[in-house]
Image (tube, rainbow, N blue to C red):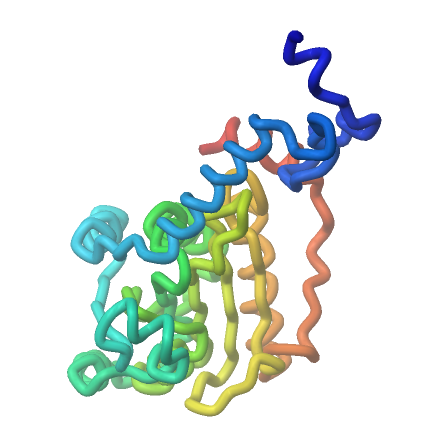
Length: 263
């Protein structure tokens, strides 16, 4: 019997052209098709690999230097990946050596913004998208803004940015961090903006831009949203639930076409 006779198609199959979600897969008897089962296994393996892949700090520092950014390397209090996954609290604290590094880099005047590229739960996302995104952001920032050194953070959680920003005396800190991998997005980057960073800030005091990657929110879209929020937070004097993203909506397909014509 041919494959066409075994597989019962789903009437919603045409909707799969608009999403990576696992919908309308069809069936073979009472089971999923072999193709769907194998594709799920590959996606699950990619997600697991993204969680455990180490950040190539040297390559990232070189890419930043070639792009004209000054970089500093820090590490959380989580000694390794195993401890990081089991002790989220340690990922929110710097180790002693990193505190000393940041204290020595503190400037005489506050930085308007400090950017942190952090591995989070997907070093693949940080490695792939951190530097290209920073290019777009820098192009859109006011020219008179003081930008601090880019901090490359290993074994990091979002709240680690609060301590980094406080030690560098930054008015605002932006975490570019690998998000928890999904079964269709092992390389999704999240952006977290905190105005007036200090240890103890809550998630309600941050703004989040999610799913930054070529198949999601494009670099140009994300950079436009982030710079809008940075300017808004500076004017408002705070970030979080009181700061709204009022940037015009652009369809993902239009944004990707624009980015291909303006790489």
